[in-house]
Length: 338
Image (cartoon, rainbow, N blue to C red; front, side):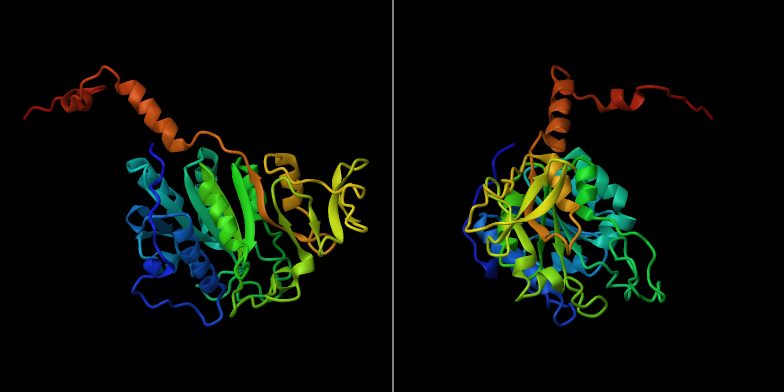
């Protein structure tokens, strides 16, 4: 497959003529602008770009991007994306989903897309609630979440989308939040990855789950609770005053103080995006005692699904002439006479 030909566009080139309709203050607006800023920076071509979505507030996304788009059925966007990519591997495919669409109704479709390693970008908007259908609790809602479906508080244990992705052998896993200035950089890294790139984006639902992420994702004042990961750089946060180290006695992560910038003396880990074991630990750090790990947690490419399928088809077809009649008659056939 050829490399994507980069062209020059601006943010305006990616704005469709459709009125953007989300609730005022919804985090989806910020994500939309981040994507529309990112696409010109990666040299994307509107004529070669496809956005695929399922059902939910996030899934209105294809209407607002000036490119090709499919607004599909609940949870099945990964199946459509797989068909699109196999039919035309040269297309740049972006999949937009939510915590309900991608982790509940479409959980097994998301799993198979990731384990197969289809070359696409998956953006999962996680607001820990079903927004479109009026605020029911979702697979990522926290214990105690009150909603129309759990008026006394949810007793379900929530799942972590990034832990799910790592568990089904995704080769790229990242995390960010809607209003972060770093979101475009995370999206660029996802696009640069050859294979299925999974990005969880914490998104504020202004109506049904307002400010649930404020402890680490508030526009101002939460920076000390964010651990932004960068390959080859020490895992420090809180303006470099604290860091993440490995406790050798328990083989678990711990928070350490960094004095006078001496992160090496404090035993702070250096981030290695190919270290899958540490990525699992970072994803599962309990927030509060630990900061929220953000950025690219894991990035270790392998051959993509569509490459393997096309190579297999090419090998099988080598030296053969197409014969539709023979193909249709192959196997068990019956002749019915009047």
